[in-house]
Amino acid sequence: MLFKVHSFGALPDSVQIKPATRLSLLPPYLFAELDRLKREVIKTGVDVISLGIGDPDLPTPQFIIDSLKTAAEKPPNHRYPDYEGLERFRQSACAWYLRRFGVKLDPVREVFALIGSKEGIANFATAVVDPGDVVLISDPGYPVYFSGCVFNGGEPYSMPLRRENGFTPDFGSIPAEVARRAKVMWLNYPNNPTAATVDRSFFEAAVAWCLKHNVILAHDVAYSEIAYDGYRAPSVLAVPGGMDCAIEFHSLSKTYSMTGWRVGFAVGNAELIKALSLVKTNMDSGVFQAVQEAAITAMDQGDEVIREYCAIYQRRRDLMVELLRDIGLSCETPRATFYVWAQVPKGYTSVSFTERVLKEAGVAITPGSGFGKGGEGFVRFSLTVGHERLNEVANRLKAMRF
Ligand SMILES: *Cc1c(COP(=O)(O)O)cnc(C)c1O
Image 1 (cartoon, helix red, strand yellow):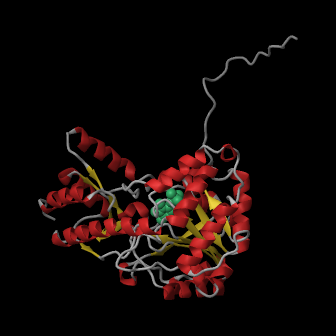
Image 2 (image 1 turned 30 degrees about the horizontal axis):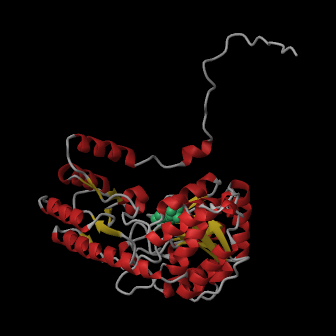
Image 3 (image 1 turned 45 degrees about the vertical axis):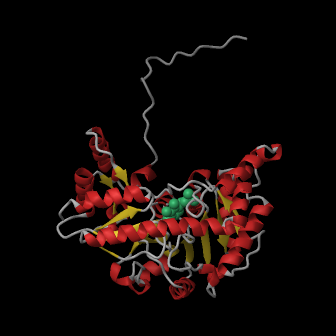
């Protein structure tokens, strides 16, 4: 067979690549300059200690790894998983939920496996946000609430988290016109980056507000189990009316030191779960079943290890809070998360303080403004390095004058 060769004349060297307009809606990457500065400091031979990232240094517990090893050997696990997750996975999630929060869920209609909660959070926007819908977003906050919103043509509305309100949004200050157009409200307690916690009464107010204004309540509970001093983070689904308006995004990442494994689950209102499942069946093909089996092991047998890990973080927290107060930085003692959120000293912005600490002490922290305008004036310290390193941080910071 002969192919006819067309002549196209002189061709350009490459196609003109114009990324989709939605990409231009993303905020500038604030950390680019800091990353550059960090590399520069490292180049001068400084042993930079990173308290910048939200990724546990504690390893995944061995019994969970063993479970993955066994599960990885089984050929049925090598095939495409079911979208919604193994029945046993969903049952374990329900059992865990009942034990932990006293909330009874239907494993068929009210639970869905996620490839990490970040995936679910991003895809949930596609499931519920139409162009022009307002999405209420805590500021500062996890950046995915914002990107999910703008990628789907939504209009983000910032709910500032102020220190005087315990870093919770003031629902009363949301204008009526915004409330009328609002489709979703994002909350996240225990909170990243502020480390704020709430009690059940806060969720009662949030649910009441959402029911009154016909708004979906999306709650990110990535840190529900990283808690101290006996604090038990509540579930919004345990509040009357919660199941009528809310969905919760759970993650095994922080709870069991499994950030790289990519597994979590969404629970809550059946219609919201169904909408999310429709997006996901068209976007991905589920969680590797061997990882699901390991996750089942974690949920069924992991209560003790959570206590052990929290005790470790708690000792680090105590050291960090004492240090920060020692050097004159004001912060609350967090009851949950592995972050400490501290106010920068007078005369600094979040970024200028972060830069000075990096340059003079070789300690990398995160400027609050990286999580939104509402984070300006604060910095976030992660408790994801061991005691020895934290003592070294203490020595270095104490040598500075602010
Ligand atoms: C870490 C984190 C997540 C995402 O966790 P996954 O690893 O995707 O499950 C979600 N929300 C917040 C606030 C986080 O800090």
